[in-house]
Length: 369
Figure 1: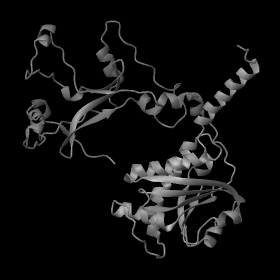
Figure 2: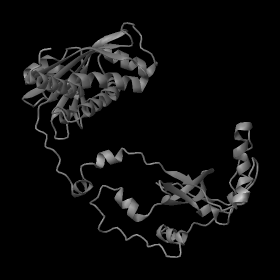
Figure 3: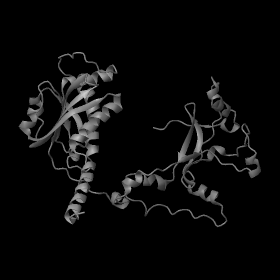
Figure 4: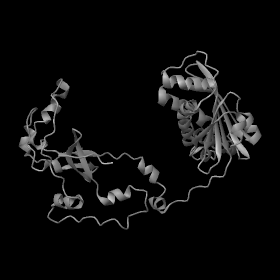
């Protein structure tokens, strides 16, 4: 068997690695195709497929020439004040109006009427999410910043009017030929994004302190359990429990609610009450937890020192000291919470809860603005 040259083996390995890398790169046509289909499916369950997407780099005159005389033209404003253009033809607009008003897309002939501001608003409901999804899919692509932060400014009556807003020298022009609802409507969606220099935002001190893995850590699961109270029973009694047995609740059960994370770590205390005729809970979050959730500089240096636990193992009193609310306890209302009579077997268990003496005097809270 003849020996395989070493250069050929290295060449194949490099080629395979390049193909895997290219498969993970999302290019603008693919990002726009995915955004058009995904947004329509999520909003209305409407099928939108792209038959073809063209991408060009044009000067101002060439970009204006891509706008159709019968297009609905939306002028968009970028965060730096420059303007982009989004346009759809009459067939796409007819499909958007039908699915938002009738819930279906028909193949009936549409009216050749002048466009209105209402048409622009109904089209922007779709295009706004499409542009946001398009930018999110591109991620690190150089074209992604051009589509971030665009907002609807006004409707242009024709391409000539739209040209008055186009001050950039060059534009990324993208045109998607879309098929809607299995071919009932076919039309074009156009985006004209101005080529502009977008400065990367300077990292804040808080972002630098969080490090480069902050985004990954935010995606980790963090299960939290709600514990309304804790009781202690002998092991023999726990083993003998049967369906229907009643367990006495301790005094002060209304103040024993907790939010507990992994490892029985208490992240918030709660007090049971009522609001607008419904049972409710008011949470008290420690100050140092609330400060870490804000967009502020790192507060690690100013956080209060953790409470040291006593040597005798009295951890409950130490936790109560650490998580004590800053305001005095709320008075318990004298009026009991009204409970409707159960209408069927599914609500019988909830109606039985109304008989608990501890829940007869829940504090009545007003909704805070």
